Amino acid sequence: MQKVSQLVQSNQAFNSNSYKNLSPVMKEAISDVMKLVEKNTEDLLNTFETAVTKVAEQHNVDKDDIEEYFDIELKEQLEE
Image 1 (cartoon, rainbow, N blue to C red):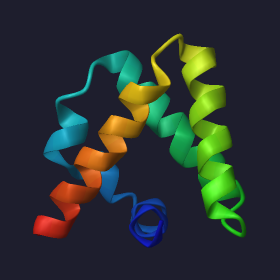
Image 2 (spheres, rainbow, N blue to C red; image 1 turned 120 degrees about the vertical axis):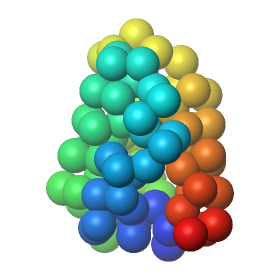
Image 3 (spheres, rainbow, N blue to C red; image 1 turned 60 degrees about the horizontal axis):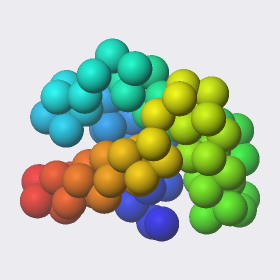
Image 4 (cartoon, rainbow, N blue to C red; image 1 turned 90 degrees about the horizontal axis):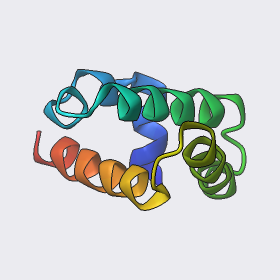
């Protein structure tokens, strides 16, 4: 979760290859997750899980796809 908090703080997720390869709907969903997580970083794990669930429903995308994006994003960021 430490890396997720770093992504949130620096908005690195929006400048990555992983992000650039997403569909427009997924880009919007990821942006919305980040916005929700930024509002409450005290309980990052629960906030992140709640945000992913809420945004997946709102944008009619698979929750697993959002989580997979963050897994890929974190791996990409670790390689830098």
